Length: 350
Image 1 (cartoon, rainbow, N blue to C red):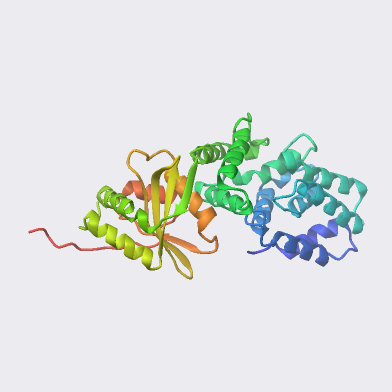
Image 2: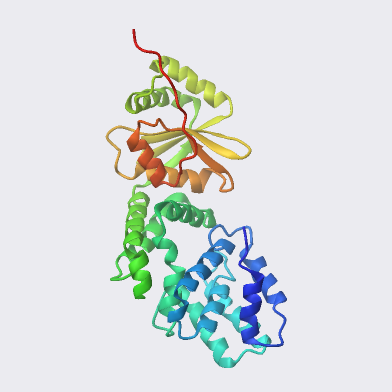
């Protein structure tokens, strides 16, 4: 994961003090943002925030304090701790004061960092801009937003799935209840509509009460029936009957394939079959049962796979029939991009 430029930090730090060496402060922040328990609140998040700042810097009243606040706002991040922002603000105070920065600068930076705790834009003239920068992830395209949601879940992987879903839904619903998610006109115009769509989709999925478990040999009969429906629905040329598909499913599970069953209140509503390889996760099948589609189950199933089961460091691949336009639209919506196209010439029917 690439860190923001050391040159950028050095140029910023020289505005704090003409004599203080910038190297120590930079290395410390890079080390903090690189901690292994961070999946979202990491160097990528920092770099994305700085990029958003660059697009709106001209509207900042205290640009030096604002950029410093972005560098420090998640310097301390422990998901189990209630005082991350306070500790990040105190770290900023100590480092800026130690470099000879003014008391006013220390106060401004600390106040801005603390504004990210409650996303309160009223604490400082530049707080609305900082809060909008911090929340810009909510208005990204669906694929990046889905990745973000999976990253947040990984940071809270010690919380039981049902508890996490309920609490996360409550947080997102509070955002949706606001008159505006973004306080500055620039960010409102850029992100508001997409952010509300993203949050609405996420809440729908979280409220589904979907759970997942690894499939066992006893599930093979049902999975074969669902696989047969999948073949029919996507127009695949596979001629196997249910009995043959059941045997194939058993063979899959006895090899290097794994299946995941998704349940809602004890009812199986979807399944996935995948193979984990050294560099990728190949998803062979994902199927939502008939009568339960277009309810967010497929999207939530993918979110659970990415946050609960699959390692985040591996490439994800899936094959889709070119004529299956609904499936193509779904896979694009959850973050897959076109990579290759298999072509064929079929024999004429006699």
